[in-house]
Image (cartoon, rainbow, N blue to C red; front, side, top):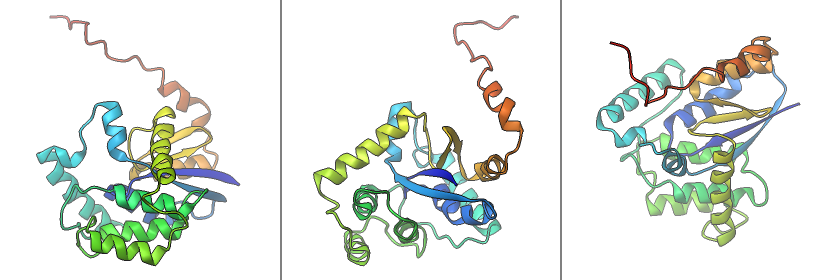
Length: 215
């Protein structure tokens, strides 16, 4: 059975859409999934990037596209009352629910829908308290072990080359984004393209900013 590691942050609407869409896209394949919550902001900081919601024009486009994609895929989605928001409480809760393991699909589903259904404040303290009581984590979300595990999750992902969410890791290969699900499905189906072209793509030369274009 193939193992898929799903790197996610509940702040990402694309991660939510991918989470909801993945069972349909991978139907017929034998696989198991482990969910690895991480801090998306930590990835952005490491790679020197701004998040989509931090660039005004991109923010507007991202929200429009997300709503369109949800409609096209038959997935219910309402934008939270404010975005971006601080996802740390939700991420720590997910880790706490996993105990010594990864959180299960039910936990991740509950937290994704906490954010992306209903149009409410995702980081509201009263709502966070309620969903914590509902999930009844085995560890305290505020414990040092949970905080360290979330930090380690993020550092491990960075070390493997993860730069955004959602990312799916299979056999050391990384598939990034909602639109990578068909590519992931093809890999699981044994598409021969991956035997040659996957590695060949990494051999394309990088742009050298010191080089000057010819007149």
